[in-house]
Length: 224
Image (tube, rainbow, N blue to C red; front, side):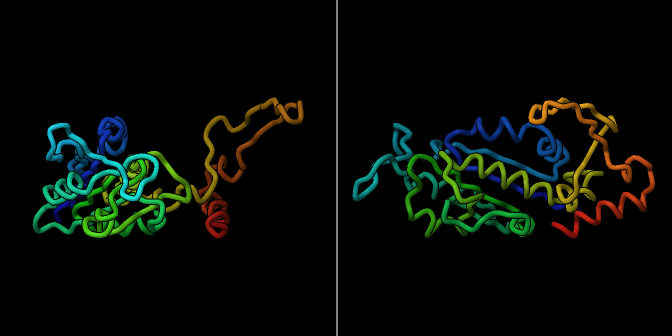
C-alpha cells in the first residue's frame, strides 16, 4: 500500500521563521522520506501592487494595521491542489482550541494550508470566505500566526505513520507517565532546604522486569 503523503503549505510574511524549524529534526527526516512535504510561501509574493503591500488601516479606525484580503485569497487559490482533500486554516484567538484530538483529525486531509496573520489581524473576509476553519492554540495573544503554525505542523506530522519511525509506539503514551535516565542516583544540593538530597529512579524501572515496569506506568495512565 502506498504511503500517504501530507502536503502542508504555510502562508506567512516571515518564511525564515518557519524554515528555521522545519528544516531540522523529525520534520526534516519526514520530508526526506517523502512522507511529508512542507512548503513556505511569502504572502508578499501574491500582492498585485508594486510596493508589495500586504496591510492597510482598519475601516472605522483603531490602532495598528490589518492584513489585506487579496494577497491571502490569491495565494490560497493558487496553492489548492485539484483532486486533493484540502483544509484551509486561519489562526485566531476565537478559533477552536487545538488539541490531541484535533491533530488526529487533520491527518485525514491530503493538504493543509495554514494562514499566519500579523499586525492587528486579518481582514474578516478571509475568515468568512477563504478559510475553512479558525484554530486557536490557547487563550492568549501572540504577535503572529507563525508559532501556532509550527505547533500544528509538528503535532499533526507526528500522527502520520512513518514519521516517528520506531518511536511511533511511544506516541500515545508520551507524557502520560514520568521518564528517567541514567544515573539511577543523583546527589542534589536543594537550594530551598539547603540540604543534600539523594534522588533515586523508582526501583520498578531499574530492575529490568517488564511486567513491573508496565504496571508502574499504568498507574499514571489512569490518572491522565
